Length: 426
Ligand SMILES: Cc1ncc(COP(=O)(O)O)c(C=O)c1O
Image (cartoon, rainbow, N blue to C red; front, top):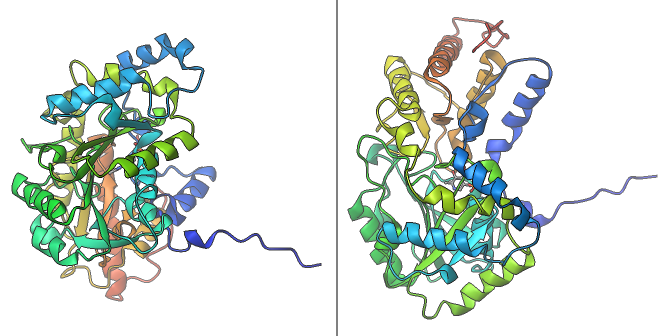
């Protein structure tokens, strides 16, 4: 008797999220066999000992008794009101709690916002490289991601003129990720202004993913897109996961600003979709007001002497020591480096097979650049979350693997992919 095959929906055919894909599954398998893997593929601060500010935990515990029922589909009022104040402090005027939607992380809101907007074949301008959830959510909702390049030689900053040339009658929205994951670029004001004018000219919705907004280095300034977009709808997305190191709380927010006349039907669609999933995680929402108010501990982590600053410095130094790697420019924001392998010294480099070799042979897990929807295969992304000592060890292993790769491609070393015995990493 033949076994009936249960097929997945065809809507998933082109949906990819490789950061948690084949490589991550292999790393997990190796860990179960007892290997110690240094996982640099996911921006999960808690996994590297970063803690959520204590007061947020206290706020949640204090309010647990008020968190047992469903709340309003848009989120609890104190959380939405706190987000309004945060926006006001950043110079965003004319938003009220009515314009704020709280979701189970920015991830859920990305899906809701696109699902409420797109019809089959609608186009969305998405950065390349991107945070791949954006591409996946566009595709899942019947849209087509049209990529605008953020090239290494331009500091990973997009070119608004190139973006303008990609707009068609089917274009509905522009996605910005600033500060950027995976590149760490922080966009200059002139670039953001030009993108704002482009969106206004074509009445495109601007989705500005600013989840890393307060994670900047060397005086880089992260400018809220909502302060620049006035004559079209702007949706700013952020949440507790990164700045407040609370990704397990699953709390994010979407704030609608700019021109809301004419957007009523769309905003009602988002409210309908929010109602269909009843509400976001309520206990986590009680931490929002405490998070947003008062002193921001992220400042201590990103300033000179802070842990994220030190890890970023270790990465910059590791790349500078390498014969093979380049990082231009150094990341100005967020908590990732998108590291390039110099094509002049490493011929035939393939990011996917290199990442697998690195995992199998050196027990380090990185995210290949092509997972972020770029057309080239010369980059990989690592997080800045480990301590500098561990990053130094990572760069030793990267260099060893690249030495082996180069020697193997010169035919000098046979069997360079044989597993090595590694010393324990603290
Ligand atoms: C740019 C960007 N947007 C959104 C998310 C999703 O965050 P959340 O934990 O709020 O779902 C991430 C997570 O890494 C991210 O890097």
